[in-house]
Amino acid sequence: MKRCEFLKNGALASTAALPASAALAAADVSQQGDTLILRLFRAHEAVKDEATQYIIDHPEGDDEELEQLFYQQTDAIEAAMMALPCTCAADFAAKTIVATLRGELFDDWETAALWREARSLTGAAL
Image 1 (cartoon, rainbow, N blue to C red):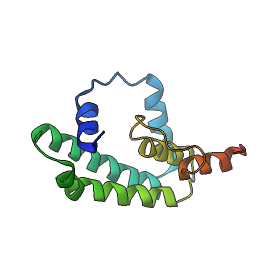
Image 2: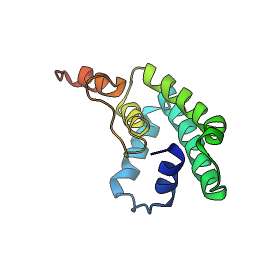
Image 3: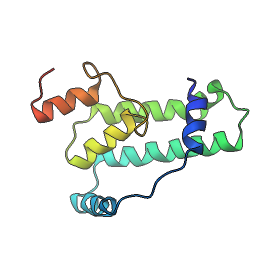
């Protein structure tokens, strides 16, 4: 599926209300302090939101146009995030959201940086 189509589907999908625990998790993040991964995550989310809105406003757009406007930025941010070690649970959550395209896809268990780090953090074997 092209990225444009994928984002159109995600952009138009309804979202469920956040559980009450989300507010507690957000408060916990603010107590932990801001990390470079979380700052990169917010930048990534902002560009993704811009791309989603652009697709809604310009349905005739194609992947090449979106690559130039948005995807090169999100790919660079993602690479920077994945290269950094997690320093807290919020960092790992941010990486998970980005690596799975907001929960839509899953990276390869054996080779993806996210799952290598998860195995390292938990002592899980390959």
